Image (cartoon, rainbow, N blue to C red; front, side, top):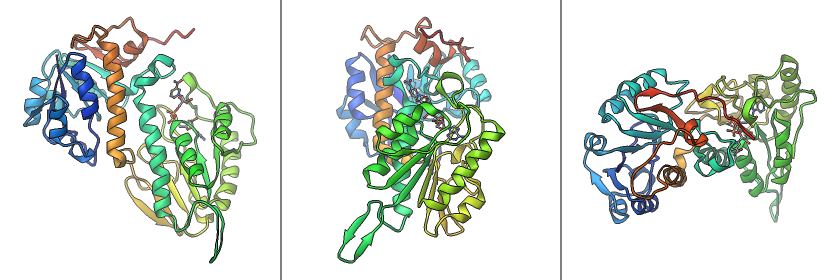
Length: 378
Ligand code: NAD
């Protein structure tokens, strides 16, 4: 079969769904690979590097979609892109079915099969190698700290210099999931004093093992909802959490927020008052900006200065490291392709008996198969 890699058309999207090293392996699995001209340009992969890896180049999006049996994408396709798909095509990309009912209907009408990388059952240890949400979250967490360092007027590490003593920066990370852990690891490696909080008590050990302190909310309530994800906390807990966060805001120089609750708006953890209480020159990076923000004053997509505090609301942090994120995403898709093509003959089999594949498959041969039945875990 032919795997097609189109150029991403979403504004500011610099990633591409496959990279030359991965293309080489897809060819070894028996596939032909076609890449739209310029698809990798913003991630620093030129057309020649793809042809050297064994791909051919399609001159236009229409040629690409028309020729492909399987399409690898990063962003969910637009309705115009769906219109370019042949009947029977298999699409593998982020889709977010709950947020995109219209797209789901369009995929169904087009009689295609769609695998949504955001629907991978991440609890399965076998699925980890395909977990693009985690690889992208890790990059976002890293880049958040780099953006914070860029805005911050001081060193992260404490130093004793001939010109005087420099105190270390203090960093507070709100939410210690995959992105939060990457952020705190990066801040620790730059030499800052780092603390973190999460509503799920189980992450405290992971935070400590990475060299940061875990700050607890003094209120007994477990934050784990279904499948290891967070839930909306009680009013009492939120009150106690606000008091603790208010104290952190007064003490620290940098706050990185990463708190999300699946299917809900991001919890508002940093109030305008807390921002006002921070030292001048402090920085907030809000990784939840696209989901409404963890800070009341975040403006999605922008850096704003409020009360002397720079608030970074970029929604394209992962794209700002496009070469890295394309490589990891491409590798996640390669691992998935290996699962779909155990025969290594360039033909995929979307096996609905396989828990991981079942979870990913949101449209099968023109039928909507999302949401999947609950996973039976041992
Ligand atoms: P996420 O992006 O949905 O949320 C980020 C973090 O915000 C989570 O840790 C969450 O607990 C926290 N949070 C939510 N509300 C909060 C609040 N009010 N205050 C403070 N923190 C709050 O999470 P994620 O990074 O995608 O990971 C979610 C879960 O999935 C984690 O348990 C993670 O370990 C798990 N996971 C498991 C596997 C696996 O088992 N193989 C793989 C990936 C992720």
